[in-house]
Length: 488
Ligand SMILES: NC(=O)C[C@H](N)C(=O)O
Image (cartoon, rainbow, N blue to C red):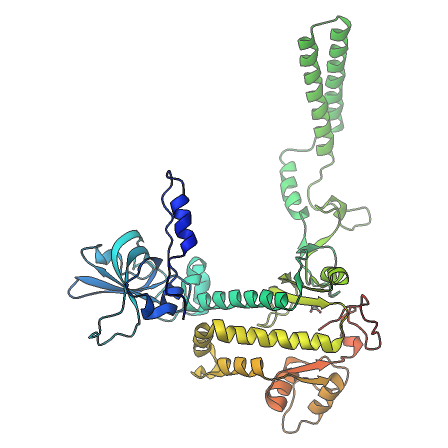
């Protein structure tokens, strides 16, 4: 059980020390912590902020029940407000934002519908952001994911999007914990890069040439200066230079000389500006051979969003030994399926002085760690997502059971050749992609191995080098600590 003392002591100390020309800090309690501690917190005063999921007036309008979420967990907190504390009609609409203070209580024993262990009896409404039920776009019931695209600003208030945000957060925390516990250093690799790690040329280009070209469109209305304009400006510079010389010869005062020098400087700068502008041509700059002049681009060469931080993190592995990178990666693959995302986050560990077995051990331990972490930290969210989205509408424990299985079962490890042999000998099942030594295993093959043959996670090693990237370590190249990449 969580610590039943909710109000964080450091916050209170900070509040005491805070400047008196500012409001005191709010020190809001998170609903997740309140619900986790349950009845143990009865009697404590707290401030809670959140959004009303559902609200209804009860007892002939004498009080209202609000189910409030603050996104810290899937479940809502039951909040009770008396009509004497605040006009109830202003609180009950779905989406209303509330910041309230009160006492946590166990629901009355005689309450027939007491489904909660703790509820909040409000005696002070600090802030209310009202919504208009006629226009608030999130209905009470189910809302299709596609429809949510039209209310992007409110999507995170739905159970699905907030559950996914919490799961992603936990997976990121677990990733850093796992690698830290195993002696790895986190390396931030660049997001803008000039190298194509995967060599497949499926990169999004980063360029300022287009925005420059757009700006240059104004050249049509306001043409670049001509040679004559520049010559005229140079004549002015000459005249100003002569004037400075004359003043100096006549031993004019230093104020007169410096005023004249500053006029000369201004005219010189004007000539430079005109010369720069005279080089501008509308559109993308093209060289004589017809290729784009990337030397005019921001980095003076082509640059891209990274497809992988691997090459950069390898250089750190060759100095810091066990490292990983974890960041956004981008791929302009023209495959629009649920397995291909233009933007995704990738974890890439690189280990020096390690061989394939060390690699596989690390991968297995990491995946098991994540599964166990999700069971320990996100069971409620995983169950919700799995109930709502598991195929065939099965309200079963498929996802949870899979996490339990993967977290506790040693992975099968077979060579590529063995995998192909097993798949070739399958009877009574037709693969869409024919199995032959040398093919890249498709997801239907991988699924068959894991779901039908072994019924547990499988690592396939020793792929033919022809279907792997250039950086993969070759089987007979096994000098420990060498700089070859160990792909996995
Ligand atoms: N580090 C890796 O081997 C992953 C590889 N760079 C990829 O993008 O698939």
